[in-house]
Image (cartoon, rainbow, N blue to C red; front, side):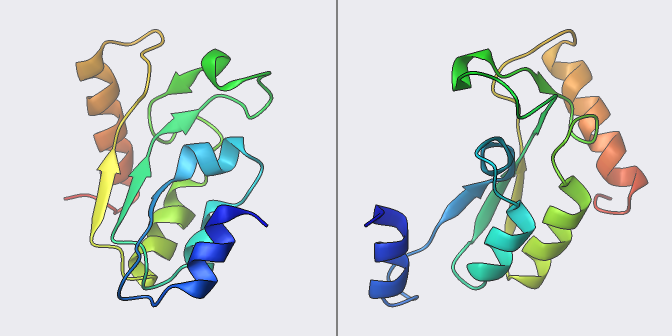
Length: 119
């Protein structure tokens, strides 16, 4: 039995919460929207970042990119997070690629603003 489903179904929702990372969920082959819908009410925060592809041989070779420029379903994930009661959306990037940290943060913010998910 996998640990996460065991904990999810056998612990009271007020006693156990999850913090999900939409890029790693995508990399693992799952849909972050599905996972967020399934765990509604138990996820106070999500991490949003983007990846170029899910076809890397291991975690160390993943190429990260600014939010909205990769394969993660960012808009649908944030919309599902809002419906699921998520209070915090954390924008991050595990490793820089071609842009600086400030350029990546700016581009990610501008994407979220353009789609109506940031002020």
